[in-house]
Length: 130
Figure 1: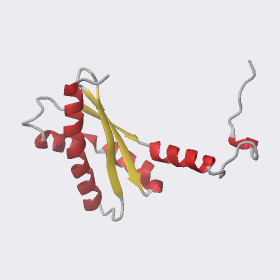
Figure 2: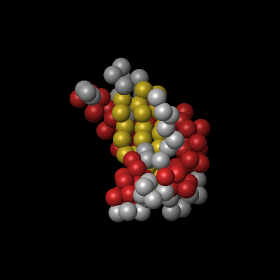
Figure 3: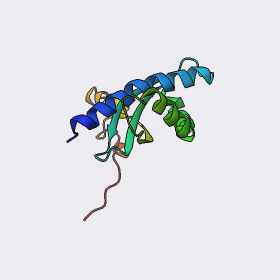
């Protein structure tokens, strides 16, 4: 259960990160790429912020994530400038791809009969017999 302080810091970081990342993407010449911050969860000691990103188009996601991770110190500095009146210490940032929309899309496709494991047993992972 997140404390109010954790939620508050997460919200502040989320709002500023959207601006920072979108501007960096457009300045980096990435037209048509949408980066949204779907969630920021902060650890209890407020030292680490896990940032979950949704990136569209999806085929660019992994490459962009690597770019974002390699620029984490710059992003963190930019954030600390923006939040210096709200946060005393800037948490370390860890970036992840939020694939929940893909996951939901896969479930919806399955429910509509798109991917039926009974018709195609290869869709199911191999399980070990115990």
